[in-house]
Image 1 (cartoon, rainbow, N blue to C red):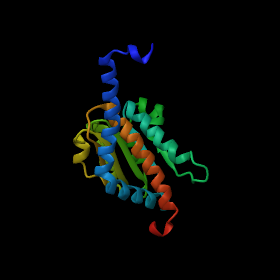
Image 2 (image 1 turned 120 degrees about the horizontal axis):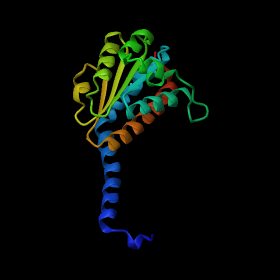
Image 3 (image 1 turned 45 degrees about the vertical axis):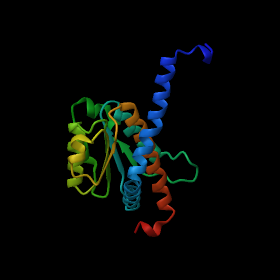
Image 4 (image 1 turned 30 degrees about the horizontal axis):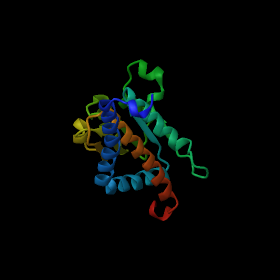
Length: 197
């Protein structure tokens, strides 16, 4: 099919999607640049102190937890150090038995660790409960959500990043860019270890 025969309605839908995929992340990063920088420094300090990243989320967000863990454990840029990270969503035996993320954190987490929870709308009760428990144990807590952040935005997290959209695709796209930025800036801070002590 040549481009001259594309239905104008379809072309408008595609164009609207492109605009949304650019505008929502742009708005998010312009609004949150300082907060992202602070989070990266806090993450780098925890890793420097021997902390580990423990990531989790439900459904499709579980794949983001897996993706971010792989980014830290297996750096795609040659010469960057591997940093310890686990996706709590990888343990199907535990999860299929009904054990919650909070239980996994109770068993695995140490005070110097980092808890990162994903929720498209901030209303995932088990993710919010796990992050609340992690905060109580002294972990650095980060939430990645969409919309107004829901219950997660009301929890006492160290950092809560709410993408200003209810579109799950736009939220996930922005989260993916965000955790790539977190990974990259953590490594930049490691190149300036005087900031980490």
